[in-house]
Length: 330
Length: 183
Image (tube, rainbow over all chains, first blue to last red; front, side, top):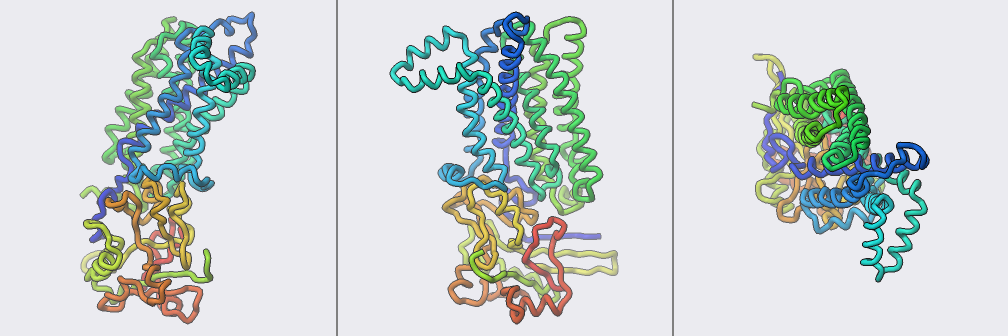
């Protein structure tokens, strides 16, 4: 028998760590979704270019698909606002950009976020319909440099697409690595969280795009892709849990939070059943019957993506090296 | 590290009675925010009745030599200070709480008055100005708290660790803590 009593009662630390609140999972969700939009926009742009003008793949993108890359800078700005809200001393936020700390995933993230803006805005510009570009060119003609940058991006569309895939992947992976490098929280402490958050982010990015009026061929492409992403996500979740179950007492104790502990119901219903299995089955039925993927599975994927991050952020803080977590409940 | 010292703290769990004078001494010396504490008392009871054993420990930041709070800090606010102690530069702290999440000892907290992270400093403001004791050490009525330089073989902490059986908390976290407990 081991029993601990402590006089410590620090706010947000005791009895269970609660340093990161609701703002962080919302940021992680929006960041993952932006990562997905960037990777998919870049990929679809490359795919069109690589297919050549004679191929069906090279058919002109729908107006919605052409304008969707603009969502990236807007959504990441909203996400960064939530991140700023989580800072206890937000007036020092500029300090992130006075230094680069290579050991700190948050420092990597700060600099990656800076790169997201030029990459996503320039790709959005190159993918926009010509009348949209011409209209804005006229409105912004008082800044000639913008026109020159826009022309440069148009001439380097492949580079812009590749940059978006790379920056999107970096953003998606970093959101997972941010939690995965915390050795003090066994539930998070897994290298799988990086790829898990990237795949989940691309899946939510595809789901976000499916909410808009895309052409049928685009919906079918994204629907099929999303099915594969959900399958990979389920596999990564399983590998992550197998890793925890076999990595020693602290990790096994942490896993208990999701298989018997306080986050069990939320995790298995919101993330696994509603957010992954239901849309996977829904998309499979749609495609099997030749239907164009609709919005309902996409909405469920978004619910699942947010729930995954919400539950992981909260459940991870619930876990520690203390060992028997059941004791902390009483 | 700017000097050749390696500060450490040693707690004698045989003589500590858990009076919490160290907690109050620290709060007074460092004007710690109301409702918060940089150090605290843990009572650990182990065994099977009637063969029970009790350790009473005065705990605080473990000033790890391989501190995850320093590594995870994105602005360099958390850093190694005098004698390898772990310090926080409030001017650089954004209150992102990465250090709090990364600390296996949950030794840090956000000071609600400033929004910056606070923790035990080993009273370096006293030590570096010639006062040989930390505030918690000075007020301890049973002389259970020792502070000193591990690189000095003649220091009390070196002598105690060489002579007495001792342990650190959560060594499996791999952070090389500099906070020792005598059995």
